Image (cartoon, rainbow, N blue to C red; front, side):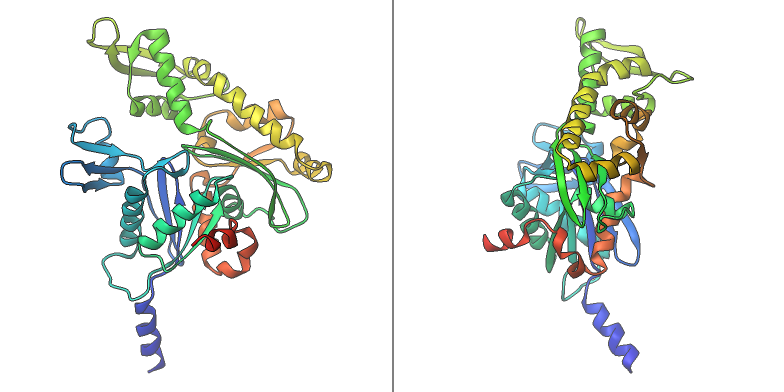
Length: 353
């Protein structure tokens, strides 16, 4: 009888959820199941009817291919909400998908990762969107902190832990000690900026116009920030700026390296700023323990080696860097109350409600 009651009670409650709400992709972690969803943060909207046509992977396929009255949009810009209503639709879709079509009386507790340095207004927008999407309680945490937890770094110890989270819209750099952020900086030099660099380079050097998806494919397939032993090449098709007709060129990893250099210089400067603002005792820990990199940008060939060479500290890529942040939010869902000191200014956010 006790077992039946337990089953009945569990059926009323949704499992708690961790969400990495990214500019490029959204990942969802369900307590007890792990990462269950990893889809693009894209929503397609019909402006004539106001209805959502597609969300996630299906919507991304439509980017750049829709008629004028249908928009394929990313509701988050540089890691923060730029379109509240569409973000609400996005979150509701992922929460429903994570739990299937079962009807629950109580929604899930949700832990959401957001970029470093978001304002209270931006944090509240995320919180409100999650609540409107069906969450019964929302906890908001900075993505570098969540990623450090996901990477099993000793954030609660009296040692300096430096992390670099390179997402699509933002790059977050943080030094963490005793469960708090000691020094940090958020930059828009991230995956989307790298794509823009590549598209601009192809336009200026080859007089060829290419879309964002093509530029991203180039970055993923042949992108490298240091010379490779075996050079990589890729055929790229686009529109000739002079004739307006299709044309194909051959790109190499050296071309991509040249395209990305200005952004890499800015990334290094941002990291140096954080290092310079870190207390000496914690900086000593960073020099000894190194920097841990996660996020999609961690997969750029040669990046850890370049950063280590330029900064003079060891640089490591976290295990499964794409899921470090969402795994961290998942760990927090096990018992959010014991992580109370890491949540973003929750009291200030609640006082505005």
